[in-house]
Amino acid sequence: MERDIGKPLFNLFLLIASASAFVAASALPNIEIPGDLSAAFFPKLLSGLVFILAIPCLIKDLQEWRRAGSEGSKAAAVNPVRGIAQWCFAIVLLVAYIYAFERLGYIASTALFTFFCVMGLALISGAWSTLSAAQKGLSLLFALVFSVVLAGAIFYVFTDLFQIPLPT
Image 1 (cartoon, one colour):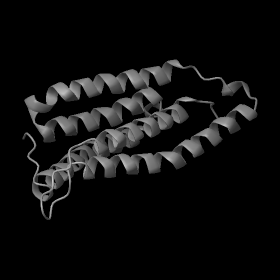
Image 2 (tube, one colour; image 1 turned 30 degrees about the vertical axis):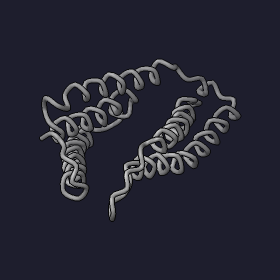
Image 3 (tube, one colour; image 1 turned 180 degrees about the vertical axis):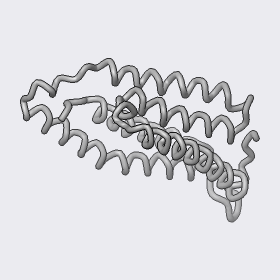
């Protein structure tokens, strides 16, 4: 088992970021519209859910990290280059998504972002190289279908259910 501090640190980052988002959402003006939710409702709901769901992830990852360190094997030493590459890739991809959002519209930019995120992280993590040719083909197909369905479902929820227009 590899000893990788990146997972616990990421979950700690999620806890801090979601708590900060919850506090920031609390500062949104409370506009009273009969029958409608306040402007702070969804940001507080989502940040609260992320906070709650990150806690068991952090606990699990810390336990795995401690277990890997207690094994004392030479494999416990991890090259940090892979973790740094994953973080840099995600940041670059997020910046590209921000620029593509208005140019390509929500569905196309989100589908591309999701596809490249899934495939890029699989390549960088080394998981891609362990797959057979058939598994790689299925993985590509699944990532493509997942990306399009996810973008379409979120678009539907926001435009039809919440009536929040997104660029098309």
